[in-house]
Length: 182
Image (cartoon, rainbow, N blue to C red; front, top):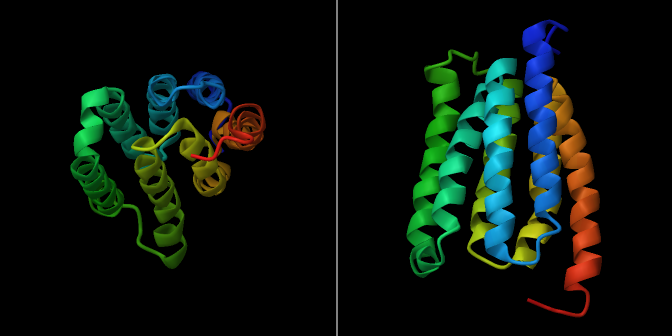
């Protein structure tokens, strides 16, 4: 975990701000509102991850900002498959960049650890083209992946976000999705 320096404390503050945005997003009724709130969460988490030296988290959240801007536009849904493919390709490139550009050693543990948030982003991207209910259900795949990554990289906001995110997704499902199959 990052030493408790001013930089470390600032990094954790950005993580807590990202957490607040992502938790709030699960309570939104409309898909577009979920995505727009998560845009702010991705922005705060990108800064958090960069400051912690968690480069996969940084790159994926930076791509997440662009993803939210694209998917928040209703007209994009007609071309969602193309956008999905483009974002998934960017995730694959960011995975490679961690080992090439940021020179993270490609040990078996690192290969698996850096794959977890990549998988999480892929699942949530595929969900973004669907309903808010689908986004909430996909939290059961993406949150555990991010949780492990955040634990290893010491993002307190990220850890709490994923734990509360799962609880918020369950609450949203019970409050908004019960009886409404989408």
